[in-house]
Length: 263
Image (cartoon, rainbow, N blue to C red; front, side, top):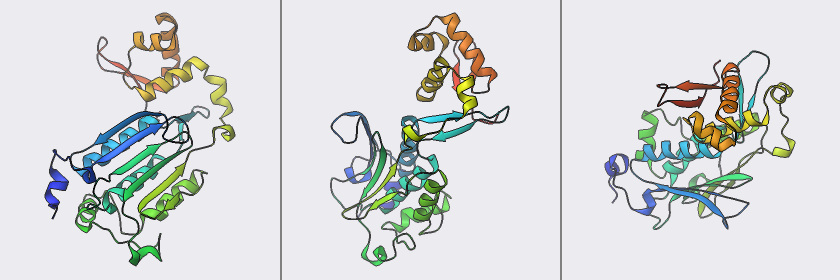
């Protein structure tokens, strides 16, 4: 029998059914995988690692209205993944050999799956009642206030997607339990007029680079944007004045970061 303490605390987890894999593919299938990782160690650290990874892969749109705080519009709401990844960790079948929790990103969607479909006792009332395959793990995360009451995760995921104006998540409960989140349709996304008026293509490129690689220095940004350092410095000054980025650290060793949107 798997020891509960080892699942929670050990940093030397190598069994596939205890790992969490992530990948991102170009296109709509797995033909061209451009990034993949496997996270092991304590289950809570796997959860944090997966959240950080998926945040780094999603696109975010910045909307500025007047002098108020900026609004961040993600392709898929980040809180959805807090629910879905924790759900996969708590409900995976730990005895399904060779199977792992997977977070897979594509051009149009993100899929999160775990080995083990719905238990027969809850299949008839899916989305309303739940029973964890791993009550000790679920109980631990409940005490850590990472998850709330049993059966509340699916309704929250549905509401988060609805509030964001996105399609409801799709659930496949046969064999693996898989939830699919469709990304925002870029062709139908309405950008704020003031954002377009105030941000040029170079400024948007800098925001994208800092979203993907926080802490970049001026010289590196200038190289990536393919402009001179003086030109890039003017761009950085403009973004700082708009409250979109900030410089952190010492003058020689610090770098630029996106602000938290509280300005």
